[in-house]
Image 1 (tube, rainbow, N blue to C red):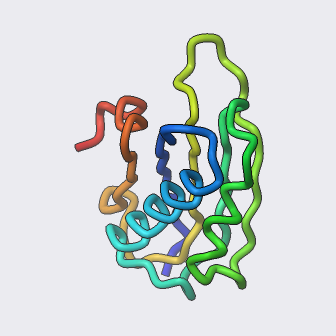
Image 2 (image 1 turned 120 degrees about the horizontal axis):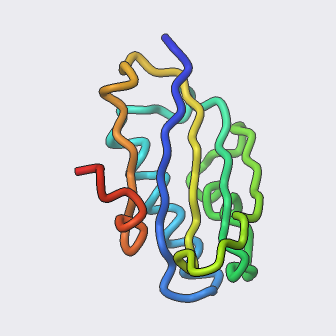
Length: 119
């Protein structure tokens, strides 16, 4: 197995705990499923959130998926004028048999606009 990094993002409709839990859980689940990753393959997950998201930590939502043994960390995305609002980004570090070209990066909801180059 090789260590791989998988990117993803989602956009929340509002800065609310329930919305954060729903969208982050959806994003992490989609990344794991699309890349055939089991929880035991995970090394760590880095979350960033735009400065307008302050209701809760994205990692809290990931913990509800049973990721209690995976190191998680949150940081604030840089505040770029005109950038998309209410976005949570992730970088998942995992052990995987997939090549870099086979990795599926996942962008959901409005965050799909961040990576128009991906199918």
